[in-house]
Image (cartoon, rainbow, N blue to C red):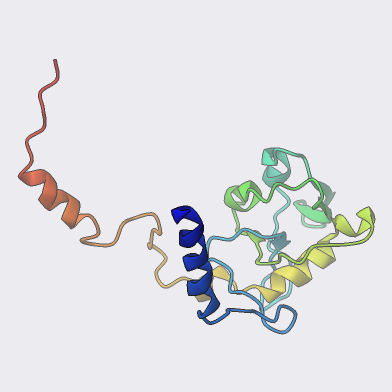
Amino acid sequence: MFDEVKGFGVTLRRLFMPTVTIEYPEEKRPMADRYRGLPSLRSDPETGEALCVACGLCARICPTSCLEMHVVPSQEGDRELGEFILRSGRCLFCGFCAQVCPVDAITMSKEYELSVTERDGLIYTKTELATIGAQSPVWWETATDPDHDARRPRDGAYDRFREQAIGTEYPKKR
């Protein structure tokens, strides 16, 4: 009997709370900073050329082999990126390709609206990925300090644990 009354109490409390509704197409939720969306290609903002040096590390490290690169020899004797294909239906959005890129040419965009009606719409080419990559800010404009390490804790972040541990004696191991 008491459980039912408790349940009704929860319902009555929620009845008078304001509702939080986001009108989705017009208003979108802010994504977390560490959210990994669709991989995209970056280009140099001054020249418009792709930053990719066609090393192929991204295609080699991909666990699902969703990246495909076609390398073309350039006139200077180097290699050049001819075609870059991403099959997003197979992609795990793990971010390995962005982590391994030596020139930071691949980034994980904040794109999450990826629904299509046909499977062919899940295949992205170099130009499509470059347009998505152009929408995201470049890392050198968003970074505050090149030596900044996001994994490092703030100064004094663990002081309260250190203070508790100083006066504590731990039991001896047998």
